[in-house]
Image 1 (cartoon, rainbow over the protein chains, first blue to last red):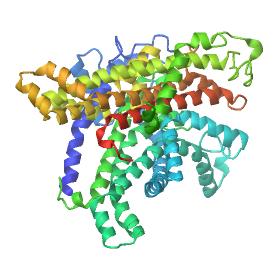
Image 2 (image 1 turned 90 degrees about the vertical axis):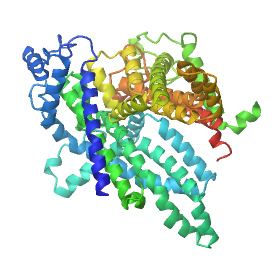
Image 3 (image 1 turned 180 degrees about the vertical axis):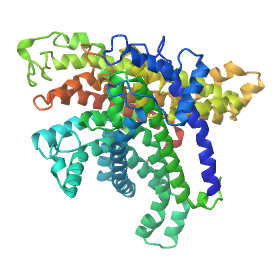
Image 4 (image 1 turned 90 degrees about the horizontal axis):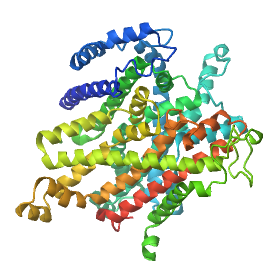
Length: 327
Length: 275
């Protein structure tokens, strides 16, 4: 297990380097000097900003030297300063916006797991029943539905027509006067729609995956053996089949991380949630390049860490890897 | 022929939807009851009626006509973006699968690196440095969605390499480009086609998301995504501005997904007889 962990950590180093190379490449896709493109008429960017950025990236130097300098700054978490009026360091701006984004995504994942596993099991156990068929229709719609449209419809239904749920922000205007628990309840109230909208695509994929995983396990030899031995069908299903069908779910959960982080731009913009996604959106609109680059790199690193976490949980859950008999 | 449709309902429904949307898009100028750009200040935000099937927007333009032209935008972005992605993916996948060794290892590591980025972040970051326009969006979506195809083509080539007909071709002296183009790739066409069709669905979703954020197709050019932006701003008073364009996206994406899944069932012999 320790060896496995070490191997995974070492394997991250080239990937991290790759992330920085690609991000550096993005900065140079536009013809001309990247910081100046489109900034001539941007009132939010002063000549000093451009000068500062020029010296930050060392744009008068050759490319490899620029990259090397940038990399050295990244290594000590120096992402430069934002173009915005406050000129605050990019890292500070991202760090204060990160918790709410991570919260929403963690809650969305928890919701995906809680809903998708029972749905998948039901579909597999009662396959080709009416229930299975309607769940399959739901899955196809879940794959195809644009999250922002679903969000708009839910806003209209629960926010405008029924007035049950708030449709923007994460607090009521008077939340600072609330007691601790009341404020938490208020927050939860505001997060219901965003979490559901973030989860819908993953929910469809995961339940489909759970269904086919369960079907595959049920057909395997050791389950047939268990049946031949006269074990109760429910014991077979929920004690033996389920455990094995759950394993690949961990991998899929890891794979869904980039989609969730990327999707946070749309969900946060739709519900006006002050998270990293909304910050990124605003940075792109105002062409705040240091912020755009910083969030791109941080988003990729978060994905990488999420994948590592998924791999480690897999290793921990799978006795074949835990005891080091495979790989 | 009829048996094929009843045996593959996904394929049938998918083909029907895809064909319908394509016809509406191609013949948009003939079908559209109004000029999609005609501003009419007297008819602002009218609810759906017999005159305006999907209502009118904040400038009094007919939403149904704008949606027909929006279909052209969505499909054009979908097809061009996927074309780019397939071209890059097939090239890199074939190089990796056929040459192996260092070439294979470095192409696959590069693919892993690109996959680390949340795709939507990558697209937005590139858009930030370019002007948002329909051409840039096609290119950017294409450049950020080739990874799956590359992996797929490589895997197909590796599995085909030891098959008898390939060994036979090799022993007759066929090699290099001719072997890949003439013998290996044609046999990998099924999965490539499936991922292209599914890729179009994905590209349509991404384009509408970008346009919804105001970073895609720019007004006054109509796109399903940017009609929805107006819908969001008027959600309290004009539900039709949000409802219909989103439904169009849902149906189109659903159609391409069903077609893709149907083609997969049809072309993948491993799935035959499995239900």
